[in-house]
Structure formats: C-alpha cells, structure tokens
Length: 113
Image 1 (cartoon, rainbow, N blue to C red):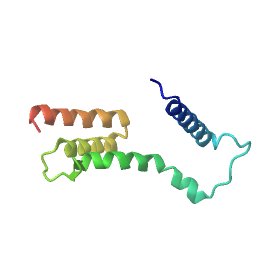
Image 2: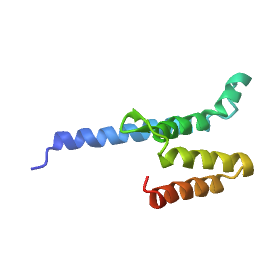
Image 3: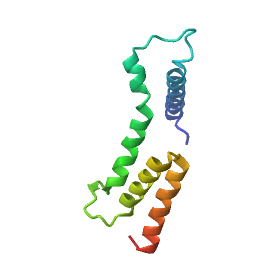
C-alpha cells in the first residue's frame, strides 16, 4: 500500500533541494552587474576547488579503514608520489592520472600489495 504522506514528503524534499541548488548555482549569474568582492576573497576563491579535491583525496591516500597507514608497502603512497612527480615535471592532468594509476596497478598486480 502506498503511503501518500511519505510520498508527498519525499516529493517536497526533492523539489526543495532542486530549488536550493538552482538558487545557489545561479547566485552569481542572476545579478545584472558583477557583485563587489574584495581582492583577497577573489584570490582565495581561486584555490577552493583544489582545497576541496585535496580534502577528498588526501584521506584516501594516507588512511585505510579509518586508520593511518602503518606500512610503506601500500601502493597508494607510491602512486600518489609518482602522480605528483609527473605533474610537477609535465604539468598535465591526464598524464598524472595515467602514471598514478599505472603505478598502483603495477604494484598491486606485480607485487601483490
């Protein structure tokens, strides 16, 4: 049996989330002129995507099942180092991903780490 009250709550929740998402994404597009923003804030916002990415990636590299990695025999450490090395050498995102993935696969399959 369908619980119409629960279905209505879910529909309203989804609609509310859609409206909030639309407003937050369109916040900088809706005004007719550019919003005044201090230079330090504008400069800081340039690094927001990188900071968010690091907040997601760094724990995945140095932690396993909620604990810090306690051994150097973890392919993620070497893959991250190889990927970082490639990026600093060539400045290419695709190469960074390929090199890091190749090192990870090689260590997992080749050495069984």
